Image 1 (cartoon, rainbow, N blue to C red):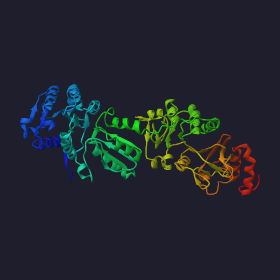
Image 2: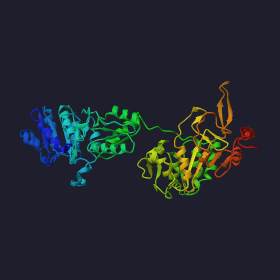
Image 3: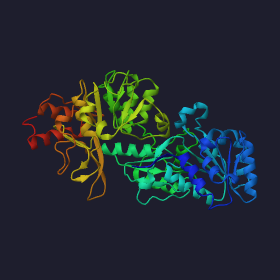
Image 4: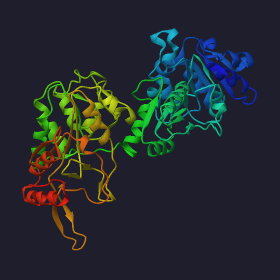
Length: 531
C-alpha cells in the first residue's frame, strides 16, 4: 500500500534527518513548530533551532543575517504569514541581496479548510513568483518532498517552498524513471490527446483524472511541475506540440500561479492559432440569406467556418432564441450570443449552453469563450453522435460540398479519386439533423468553381452541380441524407421528391450557362427519360 503522509510531515522529518550531514543548516520557526513539523528538527538539533515567536518579519531578518555568516537558514511559518506578513523582509532582506535563505510556507492552498479562510493562502505562488531571483516550488508527496528538501539545502540562493496540511498518497516513488531536479518537471504519465500540468496535491488528482479519461478513450499526459519558477519551459513546449492541449491545476489563484506561468510562456512562444474572419462576398451573402430563411426561431444550429457561415450568421441576427450544437464555435456565433440572438434556452439538452468540440477564430472569440459558463466543449465522439444531436428539436445542419450530383449525392472530401480533405462531422451532423424533430440537413455551395486544365495549365469555370460525381469520388452524403441544397441561384428542397423532381430542382440552382448542358447529360446518363 502506498505511503500516505502530509508533505509538511515529510518536510519536517527530512530536514531533521539532514541535520548531522549539514552542520551549517539552521531552522527558524514562528511559534508553529507543531504545525510546520519543524519540531522534528528541534528534537534532533535543539542548538540550531530558533523559535522567534509571532514575529515573522524579525525572523526573516535574523535568518538573512545568519546566511551572511555562512549558515543555511530555513525559515518556517504558515504560507499566509510567509508570503503576506513577512513579504517585505523576504523581498528586501533576502531576495534583493540574493541571500541563501529558504522560506517555507506550510498550510498553503484551499485544503487547509479546517483552519479557516484567513489561513487559506492561495496567493503565495503569485506573490513569490513576482520576486526577481526567487525559486518557487511545491512538491506533491512525501517522496518528492524528501528529495526537494535536500536539493534546497544544496541550492545556493533564495527559494520559497509550500507545504500541504493534509496527508496525501505518495505516487512518485512508483513511477519508472522518476527523477527530481529543481527547475525540471516530471512526466508521470504519457499521453497524446491532452496534457495536465499539476503541482502539489493536485498531481494525485491529475493522475486520477487521467485514469477516468482513459476509460473514455482520451489519452492524457500528466506532468508534475513541482518547480513553478523557473518553469520547465522545454517540457511545457514539448507537451503543447505533441498533445495540442494543456490544462493546469493547482491550489492557487488562477492569477500568477502555475496556470499563469504556463499561459505566459505559451502565449509568447506557441500561441493558439488565430484565424481572422473571412469576409463574405456577394455569393456568400446570397446563400446566407437563403439559408437563414430555413432557420426558424428557437432552432438549434450547426455551422462551419468561412465566408458562407459568416454570411449565415449575419442574416440570423433577426432570429430569436437560437441554440447551438455544433462541431466548431466561430466568431459569428459569439457575436450572435452578445446580441441576444443565441440564448440556448429552447434546447432540449445542455440548455443554456453552446455545445461544441473545438473553437477556432479570432482573439476576440477566444476572449469570449474564456471562463464562459455558457460554452461547453465535449469529446467529438459525443458531440457528433447523431443520436445526441437528434435530441435537440429543430436542429439545422449547415455544411458544404465540392460537388453535388443531380440526385443529391454529395462529394465533400475528394475531387474524383484525389483526396481533398477529411469527412469531418458532416455525415454525423446531417443525419442527426434529419433525426431531429423539425430538423433539416442543408448543403450550401457556390454553383461553379475555377479549375486548372492539366493540359494547358489555364483555369476555366466548371459547374459544381454535376450530372454524375467524378469517377472515384467519395460519396460523403447519400442523396437520402440531404434535405436542401443551396447555391447563390436558389434553394432545391429535395426532401420527399422523386428523381425527376430532384434533377429539375438542382439544375434550376446551377449556373445558368450550364443548365442546358446538365439537362443533356441527365438524359444521356439515363437519369431521366425525357426533358
